[in-house]
Image (cartoon, rainbow, N blue to C red; front, side, top):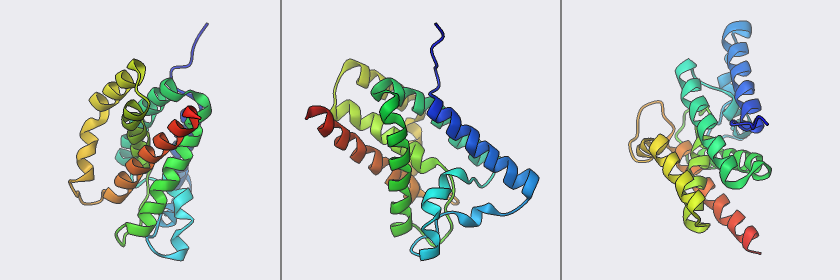
Length: 184
């Protein structure tokens, strides 16, 4: 039988962000990115939910799409389909809350907080829930996207270090929370 390589949850999310991007840039021509996260502004709270669906350009969209496909597939191999969506959503929300509380004054858009949550989860799950499979998955994730960790300490213009940092922290926290639940 044919087995899905890319999880359906990731596929639907990636389709959604591409549809929003295409509709925003080609069909509608509106600036939906104004609905991203606005740090420490009440009007920016809805951006916590909307931000992962909004992207600043085609390069930004592609640079989030590829890691979502790869890391989402690795995460499914690690924890299964049931936990994947939970980790994606809570990782994005955790990153968004961190950006809202501690981000710079600019509007933040993109799914990189979710990407870093997946990365943080995969790395920490190998430590908190050690198995050969989890270590191999973490190694593949590191070889694929370990270089992205430099964005946590290298403050590049137009890159939200806060989204990356709080996404990574959210992934670690989710790994610890799920470890406790598995141990009970």
